[in-house]
Image (cartoon, rainbow, N blue to C red; front, side):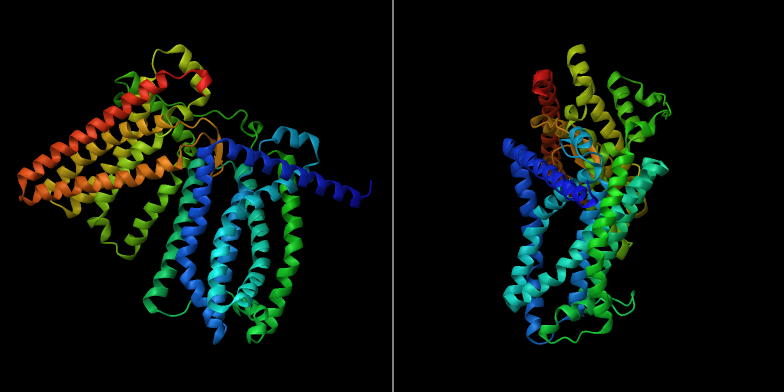
Amino acid sequence: MTARAHAIEDLWDGWTLARTELRAQLRRLRSDRRRLLATVVGVLGFGAFLGLSFVPGAIAFGSEFGEAVPLGTAGVALWTVTIVVAYFGAANGFNQSQVGTVAALARTSIPPRAVSLGRIVTQTVQATWFIVPLGALLLGGVAVGGGPLVAGAVLLAALPLMVVGLFVGRVIGAVTRYGNERLQVSMWVKALLLLGLMGAIFLGTQTLLDARYETGTQFAVGTLVPGTPLQSYAAVVFAPFGTTPGPLGVVVTGLLLAAIPLGVVVALKLETYLLVSDLGSDASTTGHVEESYGVPRVFDASPAARVGWRYLVRTRRDPRMLAHLTPLLFGAFGLAGSAFQDPGLLLTIGPGATVVAGAVLAGSAYCLNPMGDDRDQLPLLLTSTRSVDVVLRGRMVAGGALGTVVALGIGTPLAVVEHDPGYVLGQSLLAVLLITASVGIAVGLGAIAPKFERSEYMNVERAHPSQWALLGFFFGGMVVAVIGFVLLATTLSGEYLLPAAFGWVLYVAVLGVASWGGYRYAVRRFDAFSLDDM
């Protein structure tokens, strides 16, 4: 067969693989109403709620075309579109630990290039589920402000950048994955680098937005790159509306159009090479022996404490066990951003914030999907023990240990600097109460709807807890903690001591009943489990 015939055959095989995988995903969604509801709400939440917050700006952007084309705003908007799409591309390029649900068959029945092509198509379609609602809302806002012709021109300007950003992002993600597998850097180093990168992006974005709203000036791309290339490119696309294209704009337009086929070819070849190399397989870690850890005396008091220590050791070896906590990082980044602008907040709201963080971490780390996370050991666990209570208490101990380090190990020293001894003691006791209640409530929530099916999230394939349970636990924990701090402040003020005492009795009683009830419910629910329930 000629090279052209091989290429046509690979295109057909890749399309067949993508179509099969997308159909399989749709069938899984339809067969699981809870997953379907979560997907729909996630798409609408990302597209609708996030889009609605930017619709007024889109309307204003479109209306400015009636006077003069806002090239500065257009440049920032195009940069933003490119970065967002490149993020999706990089995430898809990096998250290649599996080839859909037909991995073994796909790897052996069609050529590697067709597998890579099918995977690219599948993941691109998946990304559009989130991008299309957001883009439709924003383009609708532009059409309201400037008319359908302006919206069409904006779409025409954004499409080449979206395609280039998608494939450049995939190349960056694939190269990062290759380096990640070859260098064999410690997972904790990778986690810290990821946190640092996410924090830098968050703080940089916040700084840009603060500068915009404090000065009231129009957004404009700075002169980091001579000639502001995307503004020049916008001048070419928006020429029918009165802009004057320059030589730089023509060059940038030509480079963008040439980068589309080049990006497709490079991404396809690179991902095919990584697929054939089979990076990330178990063979790459053969012979690697993990360091053994003895049980410290503080964790040697009971079987549950020893189980808790083993969960901490597993996390020490593989921090990906906590990958489901990634959404909570945005709350931490918000506090960090505020402290970055006003360092004094570290001593005023910092102690209380660390108590809240410790309590939420204690429950969400190991308790929101206790049995689903241990699916591989369930056959042994369900057939060799009378009850799962020791395992559940072990998870509660492990989560409580992490929460204690944050709430007491960080929060108490911060409180000592700014507050009097009475407040420090009260905050410490409140932290212990919240952590104790948190683990029991969380394990009860995890027993309501355990998730046993593995899914890939943040390049980690495991049975992740429900995001609904995680976010609900996070916001509920914040409310409960705020009530506790209000009671603490009322008590220390010396006023209304009788109502404060009644409030404390009611507060402790409600938390105690909820925590004990959650634990007992989880024990009864999981003790009644059989292998058929998995």
